[in-house]
Image (tube, rainbow, N blue to C red; front, side, top):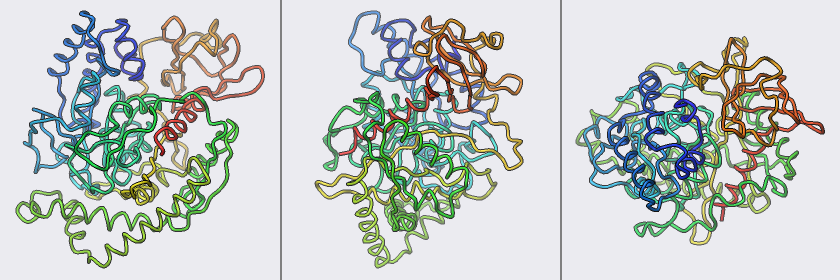
Length: 539
């Protein structure tokens, strides 16, 4: 039962806790053993708040027993990037320099999570000062939960790992140049960079003031919208902040019908994009077309220069913030971080001004496209997660940085657009031998699969919820929940009352053939929710 709880969505856990069907203590106790078992390998956490989380869970349980009013995340265990200040809990920023730093108060987003009833499981690993390019991680090398030899993406590495490996119900990261979206892409979860100025940054160790944006990493679009609804809005300290125009959870179920979607050919068909990634984006575009969206190609010829523009501007801002510490304690920085900051400090002002003008031109091109399209579609990263190379910093994901360069601080009435990375699929090694699903994430509840052809017998498609995928003897099986709240393990070929399972993929995508036509219950539903969530926060 505890493993089953760990895989539940934050939205569902919150509902079950409010209904007193499960207790907050029970939920916290579902995650702590998973952290004990896997974090020694994955290094998602810098600090685990074990006793505090259990104490908060008991307090949450007592509040329910006394009928006290509860928030939308009451009793739900979450974890946050160790870039956000937490009162009485060290905030390391992934650096030896801050290894003993203990803030006196919570950052704005952590305070809002707590006010909504969330329980803090701990602080999550990241590249040093969220900059990227870290060579030696002082709190352990983050490893991809799907393949421990591969990169996770950064800088919100631990946030991506913990969301994907069910080491927390939901996580929070921060995105300057793709730091939420890259881990989401390479770890296979949902990552949302909100509209710049929608979420407060007070108490968040800065990377680049003009681009920093806290955002959620979750296992579902619905959970991302829930967390955004909690953390968004003015905090009274940042004049750039604005209120969300609508609740981010509005219209999640309306579908993609009527949306205009532009496929950025400059990125999709670019020379750096792997064929598998290109095919996945084109396949997603056709799925959206089938859901009723209008899909057309759009060229953004200036976008390829955005990565260089981003580095010139963001690294310069970071170098300014670190200037005094670099002079006094430069030897305590990781070599990769130190090199990057020192190089940025030497960039001449004339070049920075040229980069600023280039950013304005790129932004204008993006805004022109968004005047014609509701959503722009491109790969978050042009390749699958690369192998971890000892002593060598991973290359950044260009597409994510290209998006960041367009998300500069806006003119008073021209807000920067949001960006999101939904999970798509898995890539395989050229020889075809790569195991597409590791036992780590395949560890579901101990429920045996029924006889082939009978696992879904008596269930209706409309009654089931897909919980995940497990592996048994090399075969991928779907883990579903029926209307009786029981968990069923089903095979490809198993029959529902009104359909047949045709395919199960490592991403939890279950293709079901009904009497009339095939439809992807999970992926289509999630894609539609993602697009509507983006629309809800786009101004």
